[in-house]
Length: 223
Image (cartoon, rainbow, N blue to C red; front, side, top):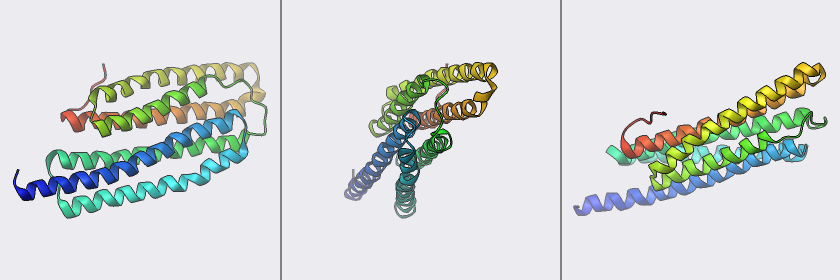
């Protein structure tokens, strides 16, 4: 490698390291937001729900900072080939993370609406969905940092379990509504919570699919 090429590579690695550090910070906040949102619902903790909504601004700030860093880097350094794909992938990941955080806020808003009512059923499947989605977020980010296709595929495969739990929650709550019409409002909100978690899993899947394309240059096809 010529001296200028080596210098560009060192600079690229340095800047990517800085952006990836911000990405992991943002991902950690998103994971925490998801967990706290469902915790606020399970414990009917209105203060915690309101905190999740307030703290979303920190995630939005990181999103803006990372996006600005990506655009500035592309404009000033004009990266090519895989380097460009790596920055583009990071840019898309940030959008997916921000949407995950929005869904966590949606869950917290449900808590604010029904948090003073006794829950019509113990929350079992929704916390399970939460654990899986948090794992998916973490693994999707790790697969990007490590360029690990195997980990990305594992992340995508976990989405099936989330979909199954989402369908199970819907069936159970629909049965409850049919048996007791007075539960319809709360049951509908709980169905929405399950749906928000399913969307979070979809965004984690999007990230994992982008990682596979980054590393292999090919789109992932689910069996």
